[in-house]
Length: 103
Image (cartoon, rainbow, N blue to C red; front, side, top):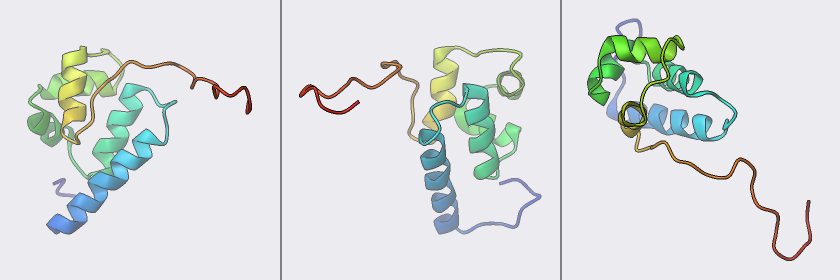
């Protein structure tokens, strides 16, 4: 937990994690570096702490956050995996309803 913040109870930590997940999922337009920065800030983690939890190097995470590197799919899944998320591929736009109604 980032020392700039007061220590949080486990319940508060879980609440922050859920909030972080909901906010990232609500913003599919964010780039991966933006999502990682948001997750880190919302969960009140330092870059070193997040890198440690994800099992990646601090420098690797810094490079991704600062957009000097895109990171590998494996690295991104490790970082996102600390919250139970993973990088996936899907359609850019949702498919229209099959009944012909709607959009």
